[in-house]
Length: 273
Image (cartoon, rainbow, N blue to C red; front, side, top):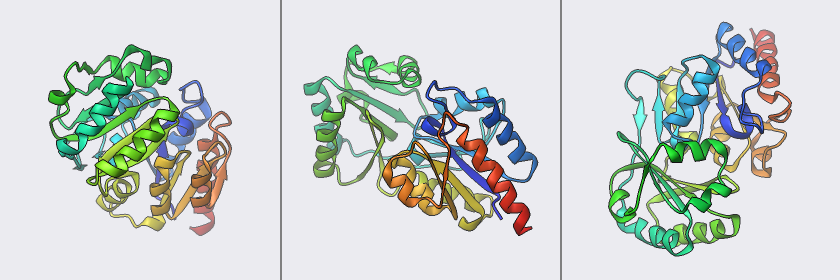
């Protein structure tokens, strides 16, 4: 029986207009009423996760910063926070960003995020990421500002430059895990830190096994949490790797796929009761 449902935000809970539809909102409330704990799981930072909770008008457990931070809700102490501080490895990444005029967003554990990069990055970032960057501290000296423990660093670049950044990280940053969070984003976390390890930690905090957990997503960053979950679900708009990891395929994010998945889970739970 499914008792926890991990839900990605972008491309999953959010429509292409970055809104949460009324059917999805209602379905998440129905899941709670029927003993299923919804969990927000996002590559975005704490602010991005809590914007979604505000839209839902619910205080739910959430995983953010690409799995580096696990919280029981908006208030209370973090359940887990995994940071990295390997500045020597980051120097080639900072140099690459400087030479190619691309963006870096750094998320420290206990302070405001730092945004480094030209205003031209606004042309490729989605509106919510732009909003988060605008509320961050603008870094003019990344060699100083990024030399601190970080939950996550996001590289923001045109697709062709992101491919080069991926190769650079693979060669120069052995202590870091990297994953595509979208066409224009690569998230860097400590090795072993991802949405899957974070979901496992949260499930264990609630005393649940993997076969009691469902997860739904659409991007490469979601694959590890789908592989952990006993019931992995791909959105119809998901990338191929997500479909390969999934048992079910839900309708797209513009067709209330999360609501469909919750309906199916509730029916399956009833059958297995």
